[in-house]
Amino acid sequence: MKSIRLFATLFSCFPSLLSAQNLVLNPSFEEVASGKSVTLNSDIEVAANWSAPNAGASLLYTTKDGYVYDPNGASWPFKARTGKNVAGMNVYGESYLGDARREYIQGTLARPLTVGRKYVFEFWVHYHCEGANNIGIVFLPNKIADESGGLLKFEPVAHQKDVTKYDNGKDTWTLVRGTFVAAKPFESFIIGNFFPDSLTQIEDNGYGHHFAYIDDILVNETKDQPSAPVSQAEIEKWDKNVVASKNMTAKGGNPSDAQKVYFEIASAEILPETAATLDKIATELSQKPNAKIELSGFASSEGSDAYNKQLSKRRNQSVRKYLLSKGVASSNISLTAFGERNPAESNDTEEGRSKNRRVEIVWREE
Image (cartoon, rainbow, N blue to C red; front, side, top):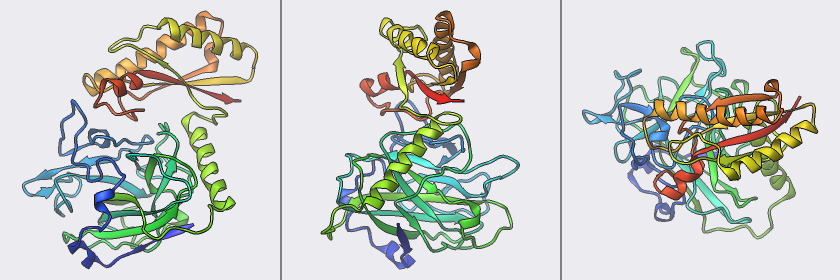
């Protein structure tokens, strides 16, 4: 595994030489998703091309009175490294305030990674109250929507080895950088701490959690390229992350890729093509007495957050009702509604929004 080394903060005076070729979409969180507005501490989904991969409350913070405003720490004002917005997430504390809580941010590359090519991963971090380490990056074939708020058990391709110390309220950002070789042509990624508390170094633990602000994320090919092919060990690591992502999409595991059924705008009505898919699923369930399915409902970005959450619930219920009519036992179906969180595609185009009006059906064995 490659590890990220901290660069001295004097590098903050110089932009990255590779920034012009950055593959990360909306790397500084300045672009806002269509139909959204930024409040002082919005959900991360307000930033275009970004989402939360689990139930942790990762946030988008924005500027107020010349400083990034954090209502939980307004007495320590600081400025975004560039622009107005920054991402914020809890990176330590597997059981915070009585609830398992780790927070992550999930993004997309402009194009898939090229297998065998060497890349640099770079971000700027500013801690709140207490410093820590281990922030890293994982690449996956698709975005995930884990229903828990706990630790995501992936193995990062690069991570921050050294502790970035809290700067005692100063307006200082620290550059963190590492490299990796792409083993798979993936374009979705997650950033955060994928290590348990026991393997995470911290500056202090007076609060039981460690909150990090992130800005200016970069993924790009390096000029020095490897002469040897990707090792089998590295390929296996990426493959294990893919398996882990499937297991997290539903309770207890996911032995196969999610099946998706789609809906018209503002509708929970089952379409004819959807009925055909659901008929097949009902038949398969009748042949597998120990199998259960998880329904995950989603919506595109039209309408309010509350409306879209209810719409995703109604879509789940429509699928459930149809399957029950085909003889599937209600005890074999569980449901989770995500609203407009974790979009499959960008909500900036109608084509993308049509892919977000969906219910994902994931199989799991008991």
